[in-house]
Image (tube, rainbow, N blue to C red; front, side, top):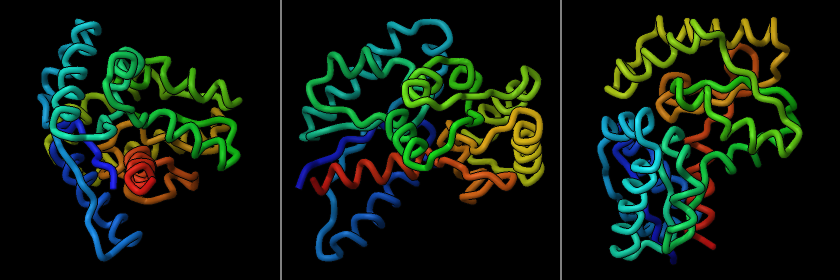
Length: 229
């Protein structure tokens, strides 16, 4: 059995979800054994600072985490959040072990589902970055983002509440309203929950009558498959 390395702490609730879901999925696969996991918990506040002000240092910070995981015996690694994937290419290029991308995993699922126009939700940095449009665009899928005001609402509540484990019904309703507007005005046929905490805020597979691509759940599935390969 391979050993998976998880870069965690981004935020803590998400890391706990990854851990529990990997164990549960593995148990369904082979209840007689348990998967080998190593977690390196890093500083989510520092990640936000580096994303905004120093992307090269972000790659260095994440690479140091991957190196620790490799030294601890991980055969491959995954970053348990969307936003740090802004530096994924640089980190993967210098990594001593393979990395499982949450962006590629989501794009593969969207392509298999046959959607052609997806809304992207996440932090402001994720919604405004080219990583999802580029990866999905190679597969003929367009990415639509909320308006500037809507992006600000999602980002502010993501950072101020979701990362702290606070999931309020009124925030959930507002995000669902944003998706419904994009459905009616932008003709989207699905939504990417491009922030792992969003999957905790919006746990249903359907949001505003559209399929929701839970990037965290998709990533967990990819990690479990790699563990059993």
